[in-house]
Image 1 (spheres, each protein chain N blue to C red):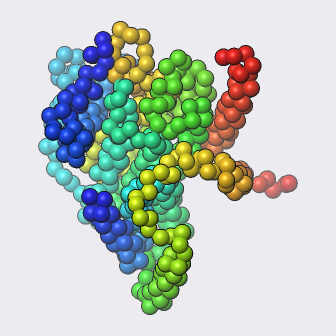
Image 2 (cartoon, rainbow over the protein chains, first blue to last red):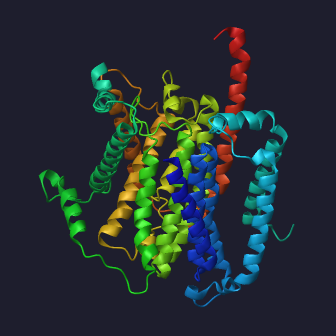
Image 3 (cartoon, chains in turn green, orange):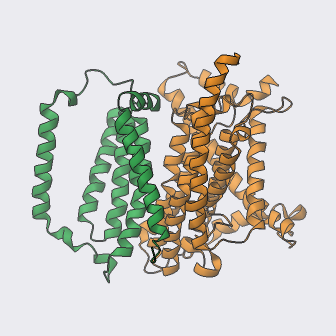
Length: 167
Length: 351
């Protein structure tokens, strides 16, 4: 059962990802990207990483809409149906993708931490486990990230408010 | 009263009992399909009924006639509306992006229905008793922005596109105070599970411990569902009807279904996070208390909608980022302080 679901959503995620790079309309690319992210979220659920799946939806899929808004605001192209001409130069893209895939595969295959477990992982993916780890073992990176995000938030508000010219 | 309280749980247990193994795949599948159909029916009936109640409410607040022809005092109007909507021709303009245009309303309804899955309507009456309950709800409802943007962009109409952009700006901004206002409750209960959060409110509903958070949640919730005074997304005087401009018939009906479904879901979350969920005086069953509390929150939302005028776009953004966000941050800080003081004193006085 789990295998069937895995293959359905893995194929969905990969097909959507190929749609991102082959679509001629840049807005379609963005929506394909959202679909790909959602497919990956389902794969996280299959791996008992519910929290990560929810974060994937909230942060990645949700942020695609912001990306579309920025893309539409910042690009100056007359015809949106042919707004993504760069994707025809696929030779270099394919080369770099294959290279990246080879590097990732090398790391995964040589590193023993990345091996498939003999039995299914049943513990350690819930929000409770995550928060316990974050507030004990990874306390300092967690706090640093929290401070960074708060600073970014305050900075965004100040930027949006505008700096007065006479100061 | 106990039988009445558990009537739906007992029905589910009886259906499970019909199978040889009550937790086999087929039993689970049957229960899940029944629950799915129930949730969908709740959403459709609530949307149809709320569309009528809303007009009746407007008639009461702003002293106009409202629907008053069909049935006693016009109470059958929603049946006529539904039949009329089903009978309309499916029109789409010539230059729309057809696939995105058609799929956007369906996606919005699907997302709203997904959010219904974690709402506990009574003790043990939750479709999926997810550990991540409230977090899942927020994650799923954040995608509805994408559906509105899709509708606005695919319509190939400048008013629709502006509406879609406004939806992104408004819903992303108000998502932050919404999320932060719920953090106070999560800090007290130390769980995301909605059923456990309700059980923690057996002695005192969290509205008394977190009054500020409830207020922020209600305001941000009204903004998230795009209702007046925060309905810039539709803003009839400026951008016709925003993302819905080019839609008609049943596709437009799906948008309305999703809007009212979102209203019910937002109210249900307010009830389970702040108003004590299914707990109430013992003369009514728990699930009825839950539904009555949802009605109370919807009543407040409608009251606000028909009382205040629409805010200006820049005021809307200022309100989210300069008032609601600092207030919700202060609420988190005060809650943390309160928990610390509570833990400091309770061992000493032996609470």
